[in-house]
Structures are given as C-alpha cells and as structure tokens.
Length: 316
Ligand SMILES: NC(=O)c1ccc[n+]([C@@H]2O[C@H](COP(=O)([O-])OP(=O)(O)OC[C@H]3O[C@@H](n4cnc5c(N)ncnc54)[C@H](OP(=O)(O)O)[C@@H]3O)[C@@H](O)[C@H]2O)c1
Image (cartoon, rainbow, N blue to C red):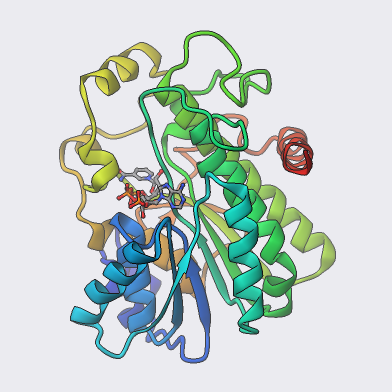
C-alpha cells in the first residue's frame, strides 16, 4: 500500500489510501489558520479528528474554521488563541487545552516565521528562535504528560531543508542561537531554528523511548510550498541565499515549481497517520529523506545541549 504513495500524493489522498479513521482522536495543529497548517487541519478533520485551531487571534481561528467547513461541513473544530512569540499565551493555551479534559493523540508543531529584521519578542528572544523553536519546545513540554497518557500518540515537527544550508558544517552555533552575534542574517536565523526543530524531535524521541512510552516523533521538510511565507520572498532573501548557501541539496525543480498546499501538507499528514511512520525519522516528499539533513543532525550531544539550554532559557 505504501508503494502507492509517491512524492506527489496529496494529503487528502494519503488519508484515503490508508483509510484513516481518526474518530475520537484529538489533534492540535499550530499555524492552522493559514498555509500548510490549514490544509493539515482540514485533512485530519476530514479523517474524523477533533482539531484544535490555535491562532494568534480568535478571529483568525474562526476564519480558518469557516474555510474548512466549506469543504468539510462535519468538521469538529475548536478555535483557541496561541501566540508562540509570547510565552505567557503558550502557558495559557496549554492550561485552557488541559482544562478541556480531552486526550491529545497528535500534536503538529507546524507554525513558523521567516523575518528580515532581527526583532526581539516580549520575552527578549530573537523572533525566529522564539516562534519556530522555543515556543514549540515550551508547548510540547506543557502537553507532554497528556501526550504520554494518550499513547500511542504522535508529535510531528515541521522543520525545513534550510536546516542543512544555513548552519556551519560543525553544526548549531550555540553562541548565536538567539542572534547574539553582529550581522543578523534572516536565513541563518531561520536555518538555526530549523536545525533546532530536528534536534528537538530526535531528543524527544530518545526520551520517550527511554521511558518506554509509545509516542512517535518525526520532523520533516514540506517542500517548497506556495504560502504567505514563501510569497513574501524578496530580493534580500535571494541575496542571503547566494551569500550563505552551503550545500546544494535542494533540487532545482523544488525551487522552480513550488507545490500547492494540498501537496505541501502531505508529508506532515503522512507522518501523523501512516501505520509505517518510523520513530525519530526525518521525512520529505512522503518518505524518509536523510539527504536533506545537516551533517550533525544525529549529534546526540548537541541535541541534549539544546534541550538543556531551552529549559534554562524558559525557566528565567
Ligand atoms: N512554505 C514553504 O515553502 C516551507 C518550506 C519549508 C518549511 N516550511 C515550514 O512550514 C511551516 C508552515 O509554513 P507555511 O509555509 O504554511 O507559512 P504561512 O502560510 O506563513 O503559515 C504560517 C502559520 O504560522 C502561524 N504563526 C506565525 N507566527 C506565529 C506565532 N507567533 N504564534 C502562532 N502562530 C504563528 C501563522 O499565523 P498568522 O497567519 O497569524 O501569521 C500561520 O498560521 C513553517 O514551520 C515553515 O517554516 C515552509
């Protein structure tokens, strides 16, 4: 059956191929008011899941719900507020979700940003590091007991092929995680946050394995997908790209013909529902793909160091 899933199998086709039935299951998809996340939420609700739609404003969640209801009228969706750049709202979101007394079968950490200027969040962190990594790290910590109690359960973490392009060959620059060094580069900050996503996924998996709990954690590159994030590409992105690109492992066709979100959501949905999903693996184009990983992606010491540092930064 898995053979019928190829790179251009859409997210909706994947749940049909696997005859996925998520009735009674509860899913959270961050960043589900737009782009890839909106399609992930739509397809998982089509498979019968109750899906939490967290957005920076409740209005955006309601708009997303109205959009999903156009094609999935029976979708069971709950609007909630979550701003990953503001850790007080992350704590409030987790508290509100836990108060609902629901299981949590699938957590999709999908929200993300790429921004040209170095901007500090309310909590004092460089925005891409805060939203793409630290906010999701905190969210996952706060929901961890619920995820374990709902096992077998899954966590899907959206990274990017840029994890391998914009970090030095030696790996994560721990002295610049928060953009401390001079000369902020948008894509280097993005690449750092996306390598953090991979370390987070791999360390989480090791910890669940050590505890003997059946939680499957994966990370992935969704491909080059036509979304707000991508549409915002400007000349300065191109300049940054040419200056810092280190490995040409992205294919020309990936760049030249971006996917729509029906295809862009497929790898996340596959990781969330496939009976064959491999614990701790990195996926792209609906299959495991180690070519897009940074040379240091399997460095357990670095992943542990990032974990400890993230905990320390969040405890301040
Ligand atoms: N598109 C690509 O080619 C591509 C390639 C590789 C990886 N990715 C990754 O795929 C994921 C989804 O990106 P996308 O392309 O779908 O981008 P998108 O259309 O810009 O959607 C990003 C989502 O994240 C949400 N978000 C942003 N900042 C947030 C915050 N502070 N708190 C809560 N939610 C926040 C956005 O909400 P608002 O509407 O409020 O901004 C939106 O719902 C990201 O992790 C991205 O890094 C995308």
